[in-house]
Length: 255
Image 1 (cartoon, one colour):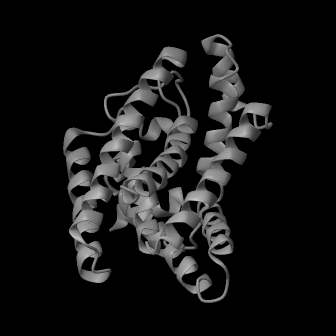
Image 2 (image 1 turned 90 degrees about the horizontal axis):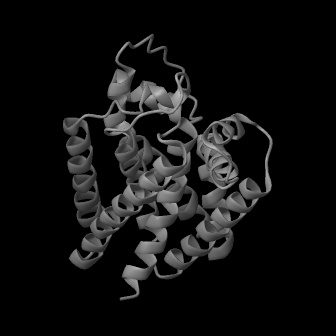
Image 3 (image 1 turned 180 degrees about the vertical axis):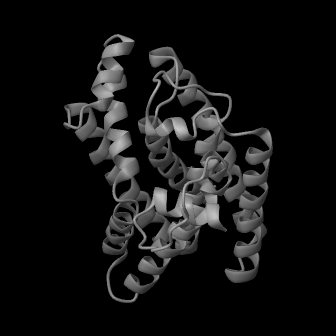
């Protein structure tokens, strides 16, 4: 529980005034990434549930997306911007890493953030219209499960950096444990709380596979550019994972 509180404080802006102290094995909190996503997902769902009684679905979608940014303090979306500025500057490795540290917004960063928000709002709106608001709960869950892949058997191109707390630190046991309890959350919550049909549960599980596939391809692409993974890339992967989840869910529900 102590480690879960620690990573919840680290990855979100949820006000939890509990001193967990220094943990020399902080990397072991990796296994709790999807649980952090679950807390965020529940809060985002509650925002959507309340808004659904007051506003049109499009406004609900905007407010759900906004709540995600507020709850994380824009931490991951900042990583998305920095990653796109650096990786698609088409410079050499050292210059890319230097650009990634630059706090200023470039054209690539701005475009990436704008299109990310547009995609989230559009597809969340479509899912709400289809009557599957509850599936929003698992958007931050599956994306944070997927990012564990980026911390498993990877390396950092830098000696220092926040991402070094996790990069290359995930073990097979952590990975499998996170996968199993994420599947359990989807099945138990989907069946018992929302009375979801088996086919809806199956489609959500398929979305996990799609996220893993995307993340593996993205990781290989990043390695070709800078030969490693940074903290910004972890944040970027979380944001992209959320978009991949809602797009894949929308497409699978349409079948």
